[in-house]
Length: 398
Ligand SMILES: Cc1cc2nc3c(=O)[nH]c(=O)nc-3n(C[C@H](O)[C@H](O)[C@H](O)COP(=O)(O)OP(=O)(O)OC[C@H]3O[C@@H](n4cnc5c(N)ncnc54)[C@H](O)[C@@H]3O)c2cc1C
Image (cartoon, rainbow, N blue to C red; front, side, top):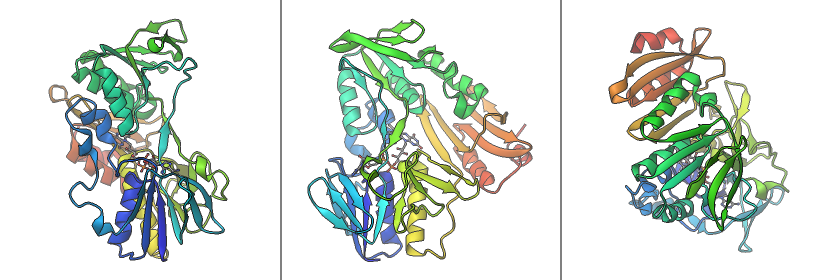
């Protein structure tokens, strides 16, 4: 392999080029990104940056080391528009064509928006630095924020806005937001945390539309209720960035389809991170996972296969994510199904500490922690080993 092109200069793309150099790849390495900024970290955007604890600059990856040691051709502010897998060529919007021996697709995802036919201002999404800066500007003279979609991003925005002293209303079509991820009991605990911090919930109805003069003034719900915020933040999920691959032979389905080595339907072309819909080697099904740690682990797995195809182990991660809300570090590992039961192993309400095990037919399926990072990491390992619920009970409690 003489040249590798990586498209998408964010977490998954950067970790791919770093892993390639670490594994001894000495050929040409090109990293293409359509944002104007050097690669930066997204989790702090809805947390430390939004609530004003961090300057935006602090989110940059490789602040100290810089990029020289990676010997990288870094093309920022440049979008890939097309790939020709027969000619092994990626076309960029500045007119350049890049040839590759191996291509890595790391183009992530874009937030979904709600219809805004009148083009009202004051309606935001949060994915990148430009988004957080635009939102911060409007929050500076706002009093009331409506968060549409009480998923993790929405609830982090709610938490940061409460820290800023703003009134917050969270709107979600589900009666119990996040219950599909956490189950009813644990979703209720999280909702109660927000209620205790002063967040109002309007749940059980979706958004029918926005109203206002030039700027948004009302969010109308499908059952007739209305909320009157100064600013709206919409967090209703993302769509993978695959438009530029439409005319290629690379198979797409809810992102870029790839196998348990992160390789797509076209040999030599890999997909990593939020954009990749990969075949989980032990679950036996495809999944697209939109979490930070997953992007890092998948980048490493793709590089392993690129460097040593015969020796690389199939990628079979135990999914993991965290979220910071108020003084709670929430962490979740594993794969919970709708009919799993949950058992609380440890609880200290005063310190907001909690460890809960999800299980089915005696087997441990997932673990949720609040402010219990060491136990969560241990449980993630146990999940990887296919542990039983009894093992978790023995290790941690009741
Ligand atoms: C506000 C926020 C908070 C988060 N908090 C957490 C958290 O607490 N815990 C957690 O586990 N996860 C969190 N995540 C998720 C995590 O950040 C993502 O999983 C991670 O960023 C995925 O990395 P990626 O490189 O696959 O995709 P992305 O970070 O989306 O990067 C893709 C890059 O490719 C670029 N691109 C797209 N199309 C093209 C093109 N055609 N040509 C060139 N470049 C292109 C994009 O502009 C972008 O820069 C958060 C995400 C957000 C947005």
